Length: 72
Image (tube, rainbow, N blue to C red; front, side, top):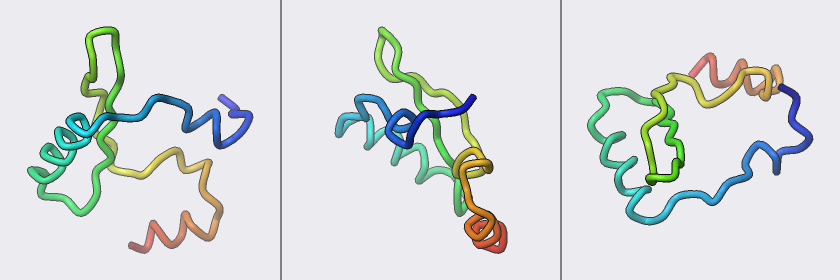
């Protein structure tokens, strides 16, 4: 899916302080250097989406940053 702009990709209400603390607590229990924790907003509140071991769609990164992150 092609996005019109960076603003379209990041559009959303964001999380509240309690929601951010919840995700930080989950993150602190993972014995990993990096894990993206995707959360979804539903009519009932915040729901867990998935754990993803990469920062985002690789197609969004330039060749330079793809290499830098790959070497890390």
